[in-house]
Length: 541
View 1: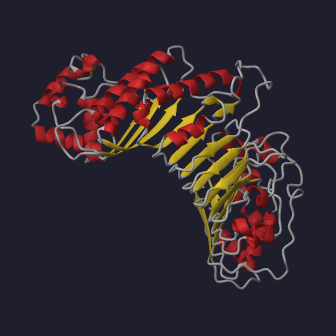
View 2 (view 1 turned 60 degrees about the vertical axis):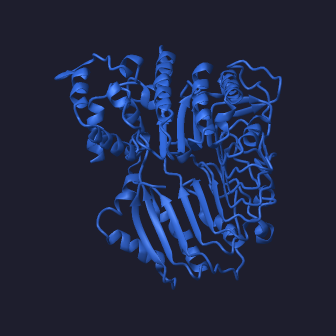
View 3 (view 1 turned 60 degrees about the horizontal axis):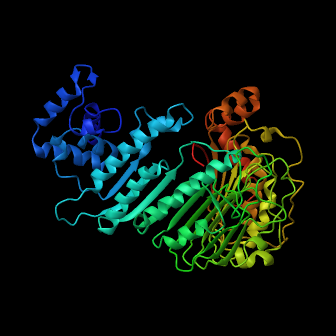
């Protein structure tokens, strides 16, 4: 029923952001079988309870854009009581004249189109936040995605949010702020510094909008000085989730020109020192920073840090983070990174409550250095889940056993093998096990590991040796799962046609159950185990 109502409203809605003329009902765009005015007149004949039912059903279905756009069509709709929606989500991408037009930002008239979409987005937001007769209606979560465009445009958005929050109409605010460009490269640093300045202006102009901010997502913003982001955390007392994607921090006073090569300023450390903050989750993806320094973040529970690690520099350090339970570290591959080798015991100093750990390798060589269990006991002694991701498909996985020894309470171990044969690094020749080895203690047995799973797209048989090894070591193992992943990108099917062996390795498990049964039989041969063995196809990671 909700889908029928949404389709009905979309048929009579204008394909774009509402304009003042549309709000007054003065739209004369031709459609098959009549004009929008004709359709609006027919709808106006419906009784209020029917119109309210239509709006309410679409609102409950989560299509807030259609609700806002429809209500602006005429005075007939605008006079109706607004649906009392608890969670409101608006995306500026839905207010362009053509679907997803805002993504194609390097077109000639992109700024005019973005301004038009922002105006429609802002009008819809104003409609949601408009004063209503006295009631107990409070928006529990207001989630907004908008473009960091002209200062007066974004200031109006901030003023609307701030006024609603101050009046108690909105409890939690979530902002995802994007730039006018879909993609900005390292050579466009000066442009990104400009966007960073725009964001600081927004914070200065609309202080009230950030008081109820619980979630903030930023991308392609560069800042002068290491304190810019820390000021956000300190200044937004309700902030719980912070996501920064390809942002940068350089010393104060340094001026950059776009395209000045590698002669730019060295990065600053990204420091979080906020003893009174409520920040619980921090995601930092490929930002231009020296390292991530967590000095004081008492409620921080999860950190994700993806970066290009350096041999002589620790990518992350921990001070007072007593609530930290989950950590994800990923090293992005570069041409000369084969010698990067870091000790987890050095990285995880002051981390004693860690229960969930993910290490990503992005098809590079293994960047963690095996260590004795005693050296890692303080950091991994309470670990429950371990995820190893984007391992090169030719690696001997036995190196991972040093992590098993260091985590005696581990319950789940997942290994994700890199699954893009279209990558040039997939076919790189060499001994992928030469840089990391580990000799298990002869008496070692693991008594808590219950689940072991492999995620691989091709050549499942390569996981057999490590699976058998773990089955022998984990005396209480309950399940072993092999998920055969799909080739997910456009380039992989073409590559598979060049290498028939890849497709053949997958087909053996799709032609009846005999091959899968033989695989399981080979896996269990000579190993007394009651673990359930499963082989299945899956599109998920």
